[in-house]
Length: 389
Ligand SMILES: Cc1ncc(COP(=O)(O)O)c(C=O)c1O
Image (tube, rainbow, N blue to C red; front, side, top):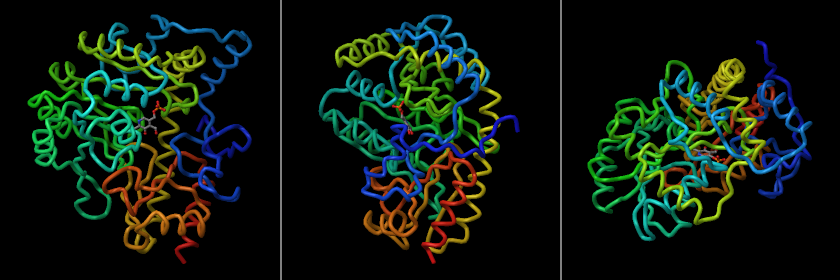
């Protein structure tokens, strides 16, 4: 391997949220394997670009142009066979802000927005926070072991019954780790088209798919889907740049793009910062080799997690098809948040995300982040094994 993902970097005293054990009232000896950023420094090519920018020393307002956009076009074409144009792109300091703006732009207070729970909790916070009506179609954990599927009948019925106006799709899905197939995406898209539902496709985890799974960009499936889609992408998960606030949102429908941009101005959100632009351009330009190796490394971590989880009584686990997040069903041994905290935070001294904020189906679950050096992951797994006794 050309890149050293085994190296442990001490992130203490760097303002890293991941290390802020005071957030959960835990002591410093707790191993943080929660929030979705990685313990790996980004690709060397990106670091070099950022170093040059730091030497330059001026961090003013930024304006994306063709020079910025060119590597994005090439990345999307090469990795997803997706043709994107700068004129269809809008630039936000994060995917969560973009989702918030989309909900405000395409629905009114009181309108129904559908999500597939359990799902990334800011979706729930956005719907509640904007005064929209939350409609949930639970994913089905058919075998009880953590492989989730869509209940299409329920999805369509909920849309009809509640006159749903907007769907926030999580693809690949955080936290259940599914990489939706073309068939699944097509069925969801057809239902949305039929009932006039706008689709906000959060595809931030698009670059993390494993084995023979393949990410399909929802908007590439048909012109009709493209016409109702807001596709949210970012280099932040892929290259560990979350702190730089940089995402690229694609809206091909011109009226929708105008509406989104107008709402964006109305809420007074900032645009992307210059360091984020520099990092994004460099990442898509020179980060492919690093990412290819990283994916192999992460797959090794996930395999290790599966080896351990197989031996844990009362915890069910299915390897994620995509994302570097692992979702454990602990409901047989710890149902409530207090019981989960007692097991993981207090006894094992491992800090994971509780499942309950992810909505219906999240209770009795925890989410572990596998994007750390193997020795750290192993330490976490050993601690959990010991706590289970
Ligand atoms: C599905 C999903 N969307 C969005 C985000 C965060 O996006 P941002 O930091 O760009 O707002 C995350 C982070 O974990 C995520 O998992």
